[in-house]
Length: 282
Image 1 (cartoon, rainbow, N blue to C red):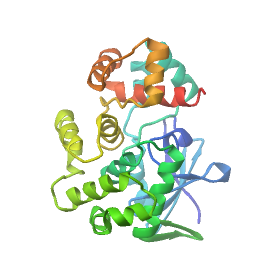
Image 2: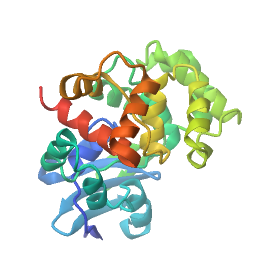
Image 3: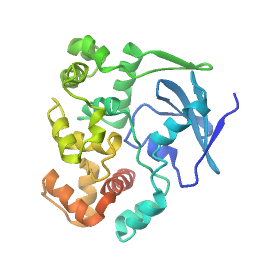
Image 4: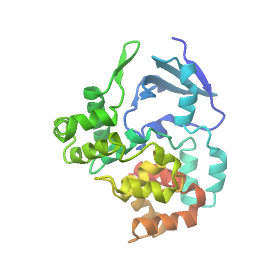
C-alpha cells in the first residue's frame, strides 16, 4: 500500500500528541509510525517533512483524510496560539521544546471512558484497560497483517455491566464505566451533543456521571468537546503551578479562573504544554 500524504503546513509532533496523555490506544512502531483506531478504521500515521503519511483500512486514507484532520485539530492555528502564549516564560519554554504538540479532538464517548479509567492509573495502565475492552467487545479491523479493535459502544458496555468490566481488570472503575454506559445508551446523557453546549452546561452534565470529578470532566471537555478554556489539574499540572508559578491551595474552579486570567482563550493549550513539559522533566 502506498501511503496517502495529508499535507500539514504547521508543526506537528505525533508522539507528543498521540502518546502524551490525551489518548491511550495509539501504539508507536519503528520508523516513526503510529498505529491506532479512528472512525472504525485501523490507521497508521507517520510525520514527514510536509505533512503526515497515512495508511488505513477498511476505508482508504483519502476517504479518512477529513476525519483525521479533524482528530488532529488541523483547523487550529498553532503559530497564532504560540504567539498568544508567548508572554508566559514557562509555556514559551515548553513550546520551544515541543513546538508540534497539538490538542486532539477525540470521540467524546471513548474519551469519557478513558478518563474514568485514569483514576489512580498510569498512561500505560489506562491504555491496557481500554485495549482489553476493545479486544473483548469491539469489532475486529485489519490493515494488512495488523489487527485492532474498535472501541465498544455505550450499548455494548451497558450490556456487559460491572461484572464483565471487572473481569477485564477495570477494578473499582468498572462500576462507573457501567453506569456511564447505561446513561449514554438510555439517552440520559447525550455525550456527543455536549460538544455543542456551553462550557458550564457541558461540565455540569459530565459531573453528573458517576466517577467523574472536576479533573476528569475538564479532560473530557478539553480533549473531545472543543472547550479550549478547560483546565484539567492533575499531579503534573499542580506541580507545575506550584513550582513555576507559586500557585498553591486553590480549588479547581479557582485554578481555572487563574488560568483564564493568565493564558486567556488558550488556557487549555497552555495546560497541555505545562503537563507535558513537567511530566517529562523528571
